[in-house]
Length: 238
Image 1 (cartoon, rainbow, N blue to C red):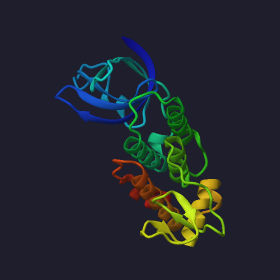
Image 2 (tube, helix red, strand yellow):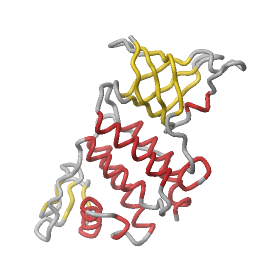
Image 3 (cartoon, rainbow, N blue to C red):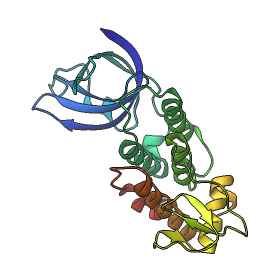
Image 4 (cartoon, rainbow, N blue to C red):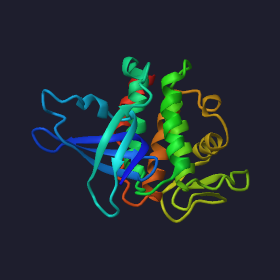
């Protein structure tokens, strides 16, 4: 049966001399793997470039429940990016967003709110004329919320230390090393509650907090292996 759906490209790999397999986060079916036959042939009307990470697509797909590899009948660019491919800062942020979403999202079922959040994030990154220095932190925090792993926002003078393992602020240090000191706990509480751009004046602090957020992902998402693309953000966004 054929289904029209929107999709966001996460990842593609070579399958044969002429074909590729593409991981796409779809509006109707969550993450699915699609075999795209013949796309590497010289005469193919469809070019591999349409399956670059974070590309926004309109698809018509075949879908069979419990089948690991699906197929596509039609694919078209839905929202061609205007600035991301030509702006190294935006393209670096897009690389980070793609890797974090790809490794954090595991759902093979529809989640309209999560899908719309990711779709709108891509459009906002492409359309913004403001600095994107804080975009990765904003995205990582909002993705936590959409995945249902946000920490409790109970920071106060009574509960000044953030317990990363339990996801809450507490009065004293826990009996494990995965917690933040008072200064970092306050900064983390601020970015959970408000716009981080007004709270983190220094790039070094921004980088440290992004590292903290990624450790939090590892602690609260089974199978999350961490990301690598955030290492280039320090130089590109400084």
